[in-house]
Image (cartoon, rainbow, N blue to C red; front, side, top):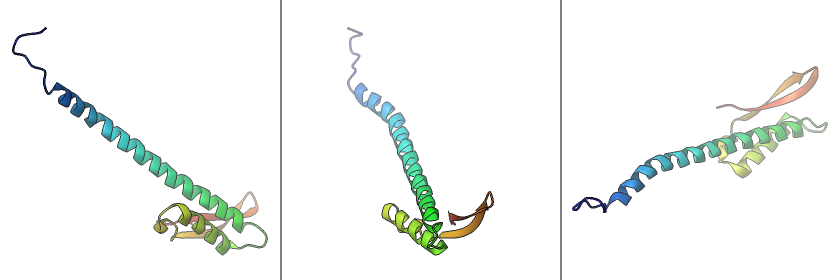
Length: 103
């Protein structure tokens, strides 16, 4: 039974606080990481799709930038697609297009 006069009232609150101090930052960190990865993957996918769109015979770099901006605007905040620009590149002797977002 324990010692007389020793009461355990309030110990659940202390346990809850000690566990919450560890669990909440861990959960928020995982949530932040998921958000960062979502933004990165969305921007990467939009750049690939825009470059693919611009590389077709009847399209130009401006069309690729517009396509990338459209895809980013559908998912993310508008400030993410304002600084997208196209740069002609050459990959293994084949002309290509690089889409980048300048910060």
